[in-house]
Image (tube, rainbow, N blue to C red; front, top):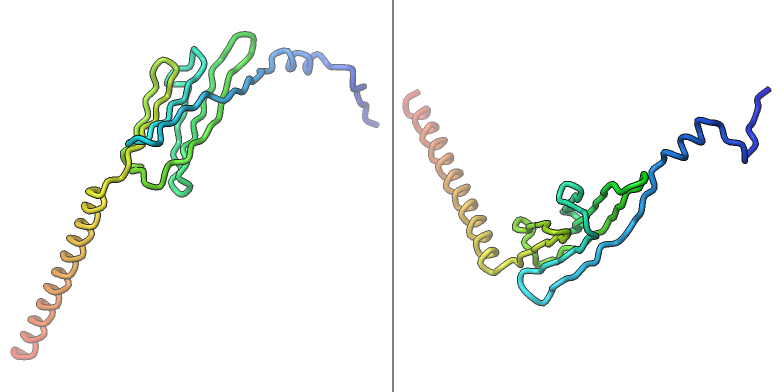
Length: 154
């Protein structure tokens, strides 16, 4: 036969656990964006006390999203935390994005792809394609020369 505690009765262990449990205070940082200018800039304003080590920034390439999370310890078993996300514009050069935290402000800079960047990418692809064709042609000549050598000197 098992015994059940009355819902209002707390054991000493559960009482101590509830006394020591951490209370999370969630908030959303103020976000300001400047989309008209190049590069795009997003500014997140945190409450006083947040430092760089308490903020985590993750970029998800397939969805083009940046996730910003933060948590800091307060007094009396409390923690302040936030979780925000930002969509990266399609014309943004994600390899050149930068983040900087100063005085409770997170600035994310997202440079716009330029026509020069696209031209460089095309030039690199064309150069690689040409190099591959040269390599294939050279391999064909070597194979032909070996075949001729074997044919004539057999």
